[in-house]
Image (cartoon, rainbow, N blue to C red; front, side, top):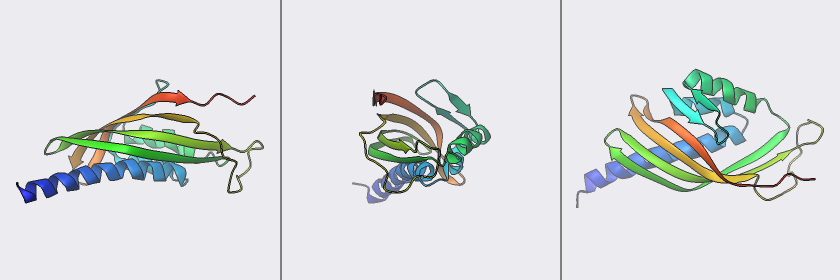
Length: 153
């Protein structure tokens, strides 16, 4: 048993797991453009619908649009976070996402609490992480959609 090695592994895994939670917090708290700071300079974000954003600047531009969407209330609930360190400076991971979302009908700012409904969608994030001079960052994130709530009639 190598306690020092085990502690280092635990701290690295926790740093990567924290990125998952910071991502969710940023988008749900109205600071979605800050998601770009969680990525490496050449990071890639891929959506389930095929959209792909390459590089921190492009990721920031994409999420700045989401940040401006004031009529939407969302909660990205990330769970089952599993990080696997693959080398001293790289890791991979998965996490489940349940996305609760409500849009106001009149494009106004929602008054909390908003009406509850089943999750809008449920899926899996597939991540790759690298250790940088600024700490662990995402180098790649892809969302895989598994469940989608039907549209209301």
